[in-house]
Amino acid sequence: MSGTSNKMLMEGFEWHSSHNHYESLTRLLPLLSHFGVTSLWLPPGCKAMNLDGNGYDIYDLWDLGEFDQQGRRRTKWGDIEQLTSLIKKAAEVQIDIIWDAVLNHKAGAEATEEVWAVEVDEQDRRVEICPPKKIEAWLRFSYPGRQQADTSHSKMQWRAEHFNGTDYEHREHKKAIFKLIDPPGPDTLTPPRGLFQKIRQSAKKRPGATIPSRSTKIAPPRRPGKGWSEDADDLDGNDDFLMFSNIDYTHPEVRRDVLNWGTWMIDSIGVDGFRLDGARHISYSFMREWIGSIGKAQREKTGKEAFVVAEFWTGEVQRITKWLDAVKQPSGGPRVYAFDAPLFYNFANLSDAISKASHPKSTPNRSPLVRPAAIETPDLRTLLRNSLLAARPDQTATLITNHDTQPGQALATPIDSRLKLLFYAFILLRKDGLPCLFWGDLFGTQGPLSESPVGVSREAFNVEGTARRSLLAELMMCRKLFAFGPQQDYWTSPSCIGWTRAGDSSHPGCVVVLSIQPRVVNTIQMQIGKPGERWFDVLGYAPEDVLIDRKGSGLFSAHGPGISVFVRRDSPGADKFPVLLDFGLLDG
Image 1: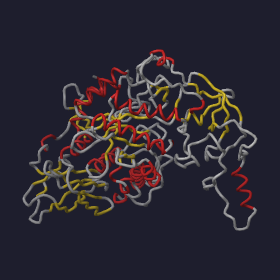
Image 2: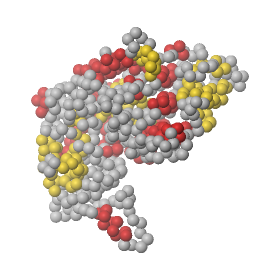
Image 3: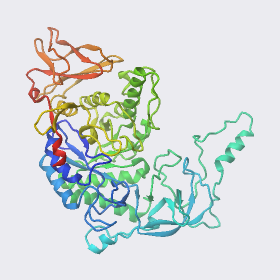
Image 4: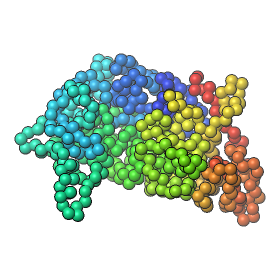
């Protein structure tokens, strides 16, 4: 990560971002740097299967918009030249580039291959539900455009032996989860067809026996030879498979090619780190090796550590910490972060609880993965409960929304827009965790369920009508300018919490008050500063200055539901508020 300032990661896209997005990002980089962004997470820019594919339907790791493949040269986001210009500009404004690495699967094969396979239970991928059979699957990746160009890129062509699963049988036009296996022989394990049902029936016949449910941890016999990775997450029995054609990381050619790709991205393309998509679905041991490899490449090139953040999406914090421990390097190496999905669900549950308290008859619209709220009434003091931020503050990336949780997506999880600002204050202005800002919250989202930017004024501040006050940008500036030094918490009530940041030798401090109680001004007495100092709310919600008394404390307030951020009247940077965001920059 760049420099010595407070770090801030930004997801630089949303699901419906336009086809000239590299150009838009390049144009916006100086503004993002001004707001305090130090690292920019790019969308997955490898060639996708579909023309409009965002890159998660990945076709070729080594094609970043350089070769004529899948019917076009560019990716959805732009071509290699635009990407190169973006990376160069980012270096000029001291923003690190984080690449979205999709390493679990491939899609868009040129041809099918006949392979032995078994269909498995979607709820427990260890359980085979049919005898071994030959299927026809799209597993031949030849990359003709890249091969004809005769570049120094990878020459590897992928075949059936490089995969261990797929989700489509071409001959029967059947969509299911198929585990690829070795050709069955006379000594092959009998497929455990109906195993779960047999165990249930057996238990029913034994007095006092526990009748297993679908969620019961029953380990069926494992077929020897080719199959799922044994060191992926164990949700759904074995969570190696996610979608499309699943990569087999036990194959030495696969390991070598993907390891080489990671070092190439650092050495030749110039990225500074990676976001690991679907980390729980990939062999932990390979991930540990890959992280070590890219870390070595970055140290040799720049003398600094590579940045790695994993999308390990689960509400169970112990699964995330298990993965973090599994990929830890034996001697130093990159500090690996993971996104705090449990904290995200705490935010969502609190939003639901507040909505329910305000409208008792309403039914909160929740993502299927959101766990029930732990409390009956809204309580800000429970936000850190069972979160990664509480368990591993130095390895946590915090977020409020991302491209998967925005409206219309698989994990869509509504959070009240007014509370989003409050939650952003929580992740931006506290000392622990690396905050990740979402493009759609700062600039708005497009698509059929588009949303406006969070915290933007209706009033325009220029003739063109494009410059508006942005409260989210103001919170970003507060992090950049004021959120430094030791932290003291004042979590005094369920509806109102506060904390102080004492500042350091180079930066002033701040006082933050969060309130969720509607139409009420909450106050908290907090120790900060020196007697006689005047502190004011840079966001403008608290109308009067706070005078620090002779004991070194002041009475700070926030009008609920809302935020106040107080700084000393003479703090450097205090005159930079309000903050305007010119949305005309999005269109060039």
